[in-house]
Image (cartoon, rainbow over all chains, first blue to last red; front, side, top):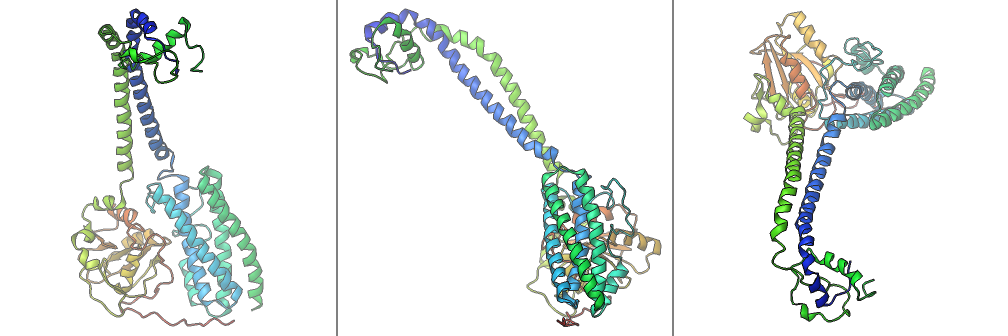
Length: 224
Length: 268
C-alpha cells in the first residue's frame, strides 16, 4: 500500500480520472459507517443474547434443581442437628468424630445449595409441597422426607444418655443417609446442570462411604 | 516493496487509489522530488474542486437503505435488551419487595429500625415493644427452630434469637380451634427455619413473625400465610442462610433459660 512516491507531473496527468475515483470515496465512507453500525448492532445482539441466555436456561421455581436444592437443604439440616447432638454427647470418640464431620460437611453443602437458589433468583421456600420435583413420587409423611427422623425420635435422641446416644444416632443417621442417597439419585436422573450433578455426585460418594463407617461403628456401639 | 519499481505507469493506479481518501493531502506537489521517498508521501494532493460535487448525490442514494435497516435493527435490539432487563427485574424481584407487597404486613425494619438494634446478647427476661416481638435484643440461647411445633408458650427472649437466624415464628391465640392449629402445624413440622407456639394476649387469632416483619391474620386458611413464609423464611435472616436453628432450647415456658453446662462431659 505504501507505494513509492510519484512525480507530480505523473499525478497531475491522472486528474481526469479523479471524479471516477471520487465517486467511490464517499460510498466507502458510508461503507465504513455501515460496517461500524453492523459491528455495534452485532455486539448489542450478542450482549442481549448473553444477558438473556442464562436467564432463560437457569433452573426455574418448579425445576428439579430448585426442588433438590430446597429439599436437600431441609434433609441436611436434620442430619446436622442429630450430628451435633452426637458430637456433644455421644460416648465413643469415633462416633463424635464422624458426627462432627457429617455436621460440618453437610452444613457446608447447605450453603452451596442456598447459594444456587440465590443465584437463580429463587426463594429458599418453594411454592410446591416438598418432594414434588421427584417423579417417582416419594411420600412425605408429616413433612418428613425419606430417611428423616420423626420429632419423637429426635426427642428420644436428645433425652438419651450414655452409649444409648451413640446407638440411636448411628441408627438414625444410617437411615437418614439411605433416604438422602435415594433423593440424590432422583436428582441425578433428572438434571443435566453440571454444577448440580457435580455436587450431587460428591454428596452421594461421601454418604456411601459414611454408611460403611456408620455400620462399622454400629457393631462397636452394640458391644457398648 | 516500496522501493521497487519506482517509476512506470503500471504503478500509478495504486498510488491514486491509496491517495483518494485522504485526498486533502497536500496540493504542494512541487516539494516531492523523484522516487527517492518511500512511504508516506504517496498521497499527493490530487484533489480538484470537482470531486465532492458529483459523488455526494450518489452516496446519499446508496446509504439511506442500509441506515434505515440498521436503525430498525438497532431499535429491535434495544427492545430485546429492554425486555430482558424488565423481565429480569420483574421475575426475580428481591424478597423484601415481594414481602412488602403482602397486604397488611408490618415492615418494622422500615417503620421502626431503632427497635431492632442491640449491642450484644442479654440474659434474663427482656421487654419488647411489639407483641409478639419481631426483633431486637435477645438471649444468647435461641429457641430450636427445626420445624418445632411447641404446644405451650415459649420465651420471646429465645424466639427473637431464632428470628435473627432466619426463622419464621408462627404464633396463635391459645383458643384457636384445633383444626386451624393443625393446619398451621402442617406448614411448620419438618421444615427447618420454622417454629410455632401459642401466645397469650394476641390481638388477632394468628400472628407471623420474621426479623423486622409481622403479619396478623384471622384464620389459618389465609393465603398470605404461605406468601409470608415463602418470601421471608431464611431470606429475613440477619446472619445468612446457614445460621443454625438446631442446638437451641427445646423446652417450653415463657421464662428464659440460661445456657446450661454440658450435662454429660464426654467420657473417653
